[in-house]
Image 1 (cartoon, rainbow over the protein chains, first blue to last red):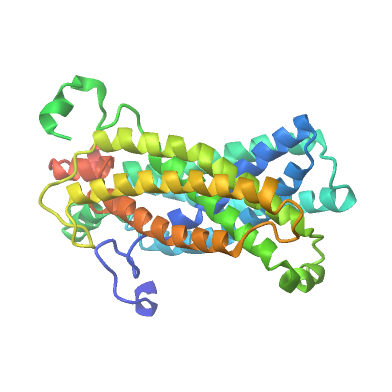
Image 2 (image 1 turned 90 degrees about the horizontal axis):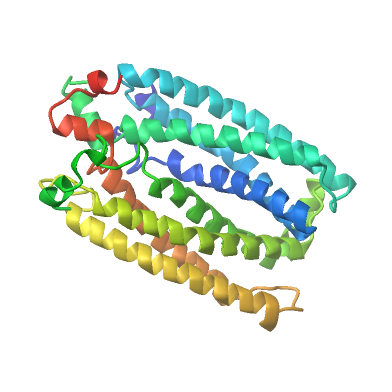
Length: 166
Length: 201
C-alpha cells in the first residue's frame, strides 16, 4: 500500500539511499542529554548561562523528536521485521511516541519556569531530567537492538527476507 | 582484522565480534554530530538574529541574542570533549571488524578501503572539531568579546563545510554497518548460514 506512493525501493528496502531516522535522533539524544548535563552544572556552579543553553537544547530536541517519529514510522513500516524482532520494534514504537509527549510536556514546563524567572531552576526539574535521560537511554538501547542485533534495513537481512530465509 | 589474529582473543568475543553486546562507537556518534551541528546551527541563528527577532516575538518566546552564542560555544566545547571518545571507540571496534571480502558498497568501494577512509575521516574530523573549538574560544573570549555578532562569517562557513565532510563520513560508517554488516549479529549469523530467528530468541 505504502509502496504505491514511494519511489522504487533499494537493497535496504528504502526509497532513499540510507536510513534517515538514526540521523534525526542525533538531535533528540544529544540535545536531551546535554540539556540535563547543563542543568546540573548550571545548578551547582550557579552559572545561569547554562540554563539558557539547556532550554534551547531542549527546545530543539522537542522539534526534532516529531521529525524522528515521522521517519521512524516510515522506516518501521518498510523494515520487514521477522518473528523475533516484533516485540522490540513494538516497544521502540510505543516508547518513541510516548517520549514525544513527555519531552513536549517537560519543555512546556521549562518554558513556564523560564518565563517566570530564567535565573533559577527548581530542583524538581533536575529530577525530571534524570528520569527523562533514563527513558531516552532506554529508547536508544531498543533502537540499538533493532540495528545491531536484528540488522533491520541492512542488506544481508533484506536479502534473506527476499530469498524467504527470514 | 585478519581472522587468525581475531582467533587469539579466543572466546572473549560475542556473535557480533565484540566483547560487549552493543557497539559503543555509533552511540557516541549521536553526541558528536548532534552537538557539533547544533553548535553551528545556533551560531547561525545568533548571527542572523536581527532577521528572526519578529518570529520569536510572534511565538512569544523570549530570546536574547547572546544566549544563542552561549549555545554555540558550550555545544562546540562538549562536541570536542566527547569526540575523543567517539574516535577511540571507533578505532577499537574497527580493529575487531571482519567484513565480507566479496562485496562492494553502494559507492562501489570494498570494505577495506571503506574502513581506511572512515578511519582517516574520523581523525580529520576530530582534528577539525578541536580546531573549531579553539577558533570559537578565541572569538568568544578575545577577538569578538564585545561584538554583537560573536562569530565570524568564515567560521560559520567552515562549519557548513565540515557538515559536508560529516555527511560523507557518516555514509561510509552507515555502509560499514548496513551493507558490510560489521558488528551486526543478524548479518553475521546469516553469513555463517544460521537463522537469526533461531539464534536471537
